[in-house]
Image 1 (cartoon, helix red, strand yellow):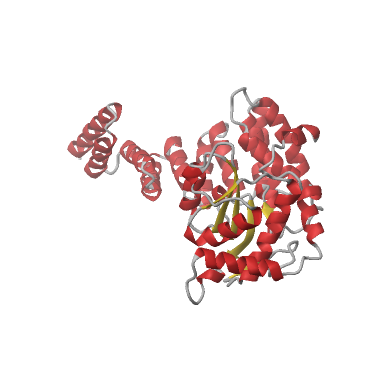
Image 2 (tube, one colour):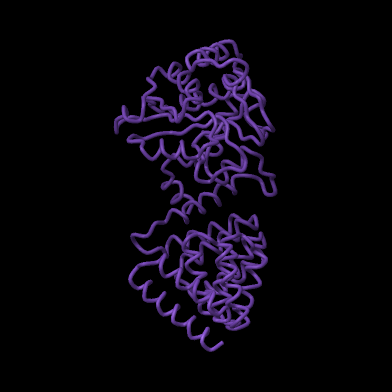
Length: 405
C-alpha cells in the first residue's frame, strides 16, 4: 500500500512538472495514473478534475472533485465540486457543496458569492439577495456585486430598485472596463418600468423587456397580441403581413437602407421581396461597403452558425430581421426585428408542395402584399415602438439613460 501511495505522488509530481512546461495532455495522463495507483490520494483527484474541467468534461470533473471532497472533506474539494456542478446546472447539488464550504469557513466571500449565485440560478432571488447585499456592504466599490444585487431585484420584479443599484454600479466601474453587462441590465430595468405592475409578459413585451428588440407578428395575429406559434405552416399572406409591418417601421424611422443581404438560400425570397419594396439591391457580404446600411434577412433563425458568420463578416452598419425564431430564444442570436417565435416545426410557404425558385417565391410575396388591405391598427403598432417603447437596442440610448438618471 505504501508503495502504491508513493507511486501516486511520483505521478503527481511529474504531472505538475509537465503543467509548468505547458504539456497539459501529458500532465493529465500522469494525474490519471496517480488516481489509478492510489485512489485514496485526494490531491490526485483534484488535479485530474481540473484538467477535465479545462477540457469541458464537466461530469468527469465533478466526479473527481466529489471523490476528493469525500476523502479530505476540505474547502478546496467542496468548492471545486460546487463550481463544476454549477456549470452543469445541477444547482441543488452545487448548493450543498457550497454549504459545506461555508461550514468550513463561514466568512469566506468567494463561497458566499457562489452560494448566493446558485440560489438565484434556482430562481430563489429573495434568498440570494441578502447574501449579495452583505458582500456589497463589505466591498462597497465592487460594481460586479452591485450588478448581482440588481439582477436579484430584476428577478424579483422590482425594476426600480434594480435601476438605482445599477446606476451606482455604473459610477463604480473603473475607466476602460466594459460596462455592457451593467448597461444591458439597466435597460432591462427601464424597459420593465414601462409596463404596468404585475402585467404578464407576452411575446411582444418579453422581446422588448429582455432584449430591446421589435416583435412584429404575422398574418395570424394583430401585431399587438402576438402568440408563440405551435408547429406553424405559414402562408404567403402571413409572411407578407410581417414584411408590411417591418417596412412601415423602416419608413417611419426614415432609415436609409442601401442594400439587403440574405443569411442563407431559404431566406432569399424574403430578401428579394424586401429589395423590390425598398428599391435597393440584394448583395453578397463581399459586395458591401462600409457606408452601407444593410438589412440582413433570415427566414428561420434555426441555424445560429449561419447568422453568426454573416454578421461577423458584415463590413457595414446593419439591421437584422428574422421572420421566425425557435423557442427557447437564443440570447446570442436575437435579431433587431423578429416576426414570430415558434415551437415544434415551422414550414415556410415556399417549402411546401413543389419547390419554387427564390424569385418565384418573392413574386408570390409581392402579390400577397398588393392584395392585402391596410391594417386598421397599424398606427397603434407603429406607436408601440415610436412613442411608447423607444429604448430599442439598435439606437444609441446613452442620452435616454442619462436623462432618466
